[in-house]
Amino acid sequence: MSLKRKIALTLSVSFSLLFGVVLIIIYISFNDFRREEFKDRFVRRLGFTTNFISKSKNFENEAPIFFNENSDNFLLNETILIFNGQKELIYSTIKDQKVTWSKELLTELDKKKDIYNEETVPEVYAALKNINGENYYILTSAYDTNGKSKLEYLKYLLITAFITCTLLIGFFSYYFMGKFLRPLEDLNKEISEVTAHKLTTQIPVEQSNDEISILAQSFNTMIVRLNDVFQSQKDFTASASHEIRTPITRMAFQLENLIKLEQHSPETLSALKQMLKDVYQLSDLTNSLLLLTKFDKENIQSIYEEVRIDEVIFESFDRVQKSYPNLKMDFLISEETQENAFLIINGVQSLLDIVFINLLKNAAVYSDNADVKILITENETHLSVDVFSEGNTISEEEQPKLFEAFMRGNNSQNISGSGLGLRIAKRILEYHNANIQYNSPNENMNKFSVIFNK
Image (cartoon, rainbow, N blue to C red; front, side, top):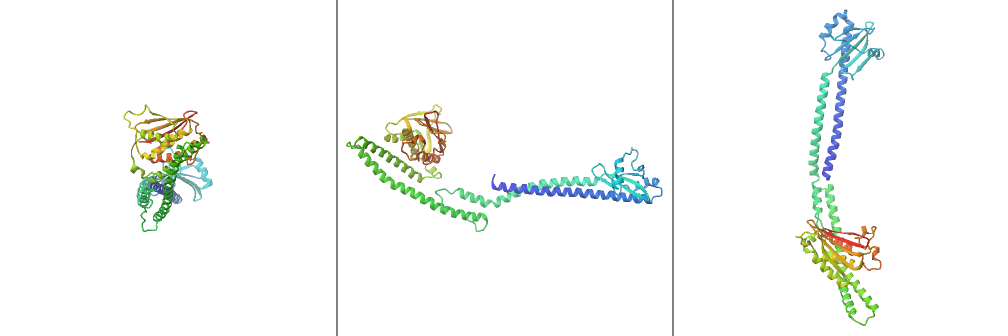
C-alpha cells in the first residue's frame, strides 16, 4: 500500500472513530434529556393530580370530568390509577377494560415514596402522597410517543451524517494527500532514474524549507559523494586491469617459448606448464574484471545483440581445450526443445563467453574423467543450458554460498583457483536477466543450470 493511501486511510479511520464517538455521546445525551424531560412531565402531572384531590369536595364524582378535560395537558395516552390508604383502587382512567396493577409496586412505595420505571412499556411513575391527612397511592403511566419519535429520527440522522462524513473525509483525505505528496512522488521518479552511469544527475530542489526539499538537498549531496567513490573505484579497477594485462601477456609469451625448448627436465617442464595455466587463469580473470567495469545492469541492454547459445558454447570449449587438451564435450539438444527453436538469446557474447568458459573449466578441473555433457532445452519462455560433469559434489552446507566471492568448496582442495569464477558468472547472468543454479542429481554428478528468460 502506498504512503498516500496509508495516510488517507489512517485519517479516515481516525476521523470516523472520533466522529462516531461524538455522535454516540450526542445520542446518549439526547436520550437522557428525553428521559428527564418525560419524568418531569410525570412529576408535574402528579402535582396537578395531588392538587385536585386536595381541593376536591367529592373526588369520585368530580374525577372523571376533571381528568377528561385535562388529559392532554401533560402526557399523551396517560393512564392514572389512584388507591386509598388501604391500597384499594378508588379511581381509574381505564374504562371498559379490566384494571391490573402491581401490588409489589404499591408495597415498595411505602419505603421509597416515589418510583420512576422507564424500562416498562409504557413508562410508569408512582408516588405516595399524604393529602388532607390521608394517604393516596397514585400510579401514572404513559407513552413518550413524541420523545421516542424524535429519538428515532435523531438516530437515523446521526447514522446518515456518520456515513456521509466518513465517505467525504475519505475522499478529501486521499485527494489532499495526493496533492501534498506529489513532490515526494516526483522526487521518487527522479531518484529511480539515477543509475551508475547517471550519478551526476541532480534532483531539482524547490526554494522552500519543507521536509521534501531538505530530503532532495541531502540526496544530491549523497549522489555527489557516491559518484566520487564509484568513479574512483571504477577508474582503479580499469587502470589496474589494463596495466596488469601487458605483463601477463608478456609472461605467457615467454612461458610458451620456454616450454617449446627441449632441454628442460620433466620436473621443470611440468612446473612451467602449471605456471602457464596460472597465467592464463590470471589473464581470464583480468579480462573479466575489465569487461565488468564497462557495463552495469542498466546500460548493458543498449548493446545487446542476437547471440546463438550453441556457438558461444563451442567457442568457449575451444578456448578451454587449449589449456586442457583432455577435455571432451558431449553436446545435446533436449527432445523437449521445439522444432522451430533457434537457440538465440539477446546479450553480449564476450560476457557470455566468460560464463561458459568458467563452467567448462570447472568441469575440466574438478571432474574425474575430464568429460562434460551439455544439454540445451528451449521452450516459449525459457532457454536453459545444463552442464553435467562427474566428480566430487558440493555439500548441501556449501551450496548456498557457492556463488559468493572467494568461495571454494571442499572438493577444490589441492586445486589452484581464485574462487571468483562462479561469482563473475552469476553477475554476468544477472546482467542478462538470467539465473544460474547448482544441484547434484546423484552421488557423483555435478549439474550447473543456466536459465535465460525470453
